[in-house]
Image (cartoon, rainbow, N blue to C red; front, side, top):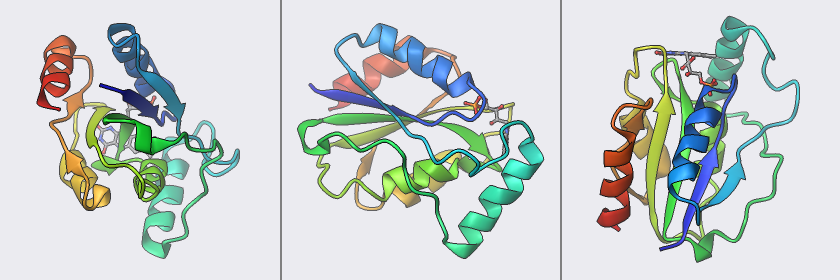
Length: 153
Ligand SMILES: Cc1cc2nc3c(=O)[nH]c(=O)nc-3n(C[C@H](O)[C@H](O)[C@H](O)COP(=O)(O)O)c2cc1C
């Protein structure tokens, strides 16, 4: 099974969870979901929240900086995101809208400060026609999740 770990992280926590997942899946490839510098405040979470809300209400989304790999070659994409206002981060929405040639399944992993809100339901919505497996919140029972999603496919 060919796996891609795609990750957006604003302040580093989701990136660290992605590293822990990658340690357990040494054959997986990595893709960093990034947007142009200056899209969000580098330090202020409230300003970032306002910027993200404006993008969601206007539909004016930032582009992804890194070119996507050939997604048709993957069976499973693990998509990492922080929880922003009870849903995935906006750059993850942009990533999920660019999976036209991907035929496999998606599984989200995410970090938050205690309130995931509707993260997984919104992820499923943003994933459109793609199959979405159960998600992983923070580090709890990470090994169980990896066993489950790698067997589900
Ligand atoms: C714009 C913004 C909105 C957030 N909204 C939530 C939220 O709704 N619930 C929550 O528990 N944490 C929320 N947080 C905290 C982050 O989800 C949490 O710190 C996360 O682990 C950060 O991941 P990162 O370091 O990969 O960016 C928010 C943070 C930011 C910057």
